[in-house]
Image (cartoon, rainbow, N blue to C red):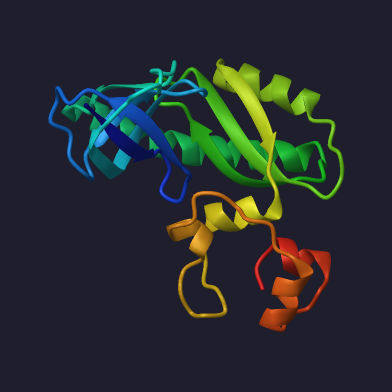
Length: 199
């Protein structure tokens, strides 16, 4: 029997699930260090399923490495400051190069092996020179990732027409498609921007 841990690596991010052998007595709300597809990350345990029969499930390359230590938490606090600084520099370079894109968020991997800049744009953007400049400035791997309007809403959070935080920022793990029928039932404008963003 194993535990299944649901870990969120960003405050309003998607929950990732890991098979875990209970050696460190990890509890809900504990911070953990994990190997993910992106690299080494630090996240919060938000879901625990005890005594889960693994059966035919194989252990993936992604795994929980260990419970976060005191020095990991200090590094995480420093990482947030570095992300704010990286965002500021990236925005300045976007303005300087007059690129038609909007920076939404910046993420340093926990081991500082890569910085991911999330942006939205209405058209295709040639950001090769921007990547080169950012790589020279930060001396690490750079990834610019274009996201959709709904993903931007999740990252920035906000209030829906119900007066509560967006569902995608609180409990929804994946985006479900919004059909015209759903929009009509809600009585909202049927323009594409309203269907893909906030109402």
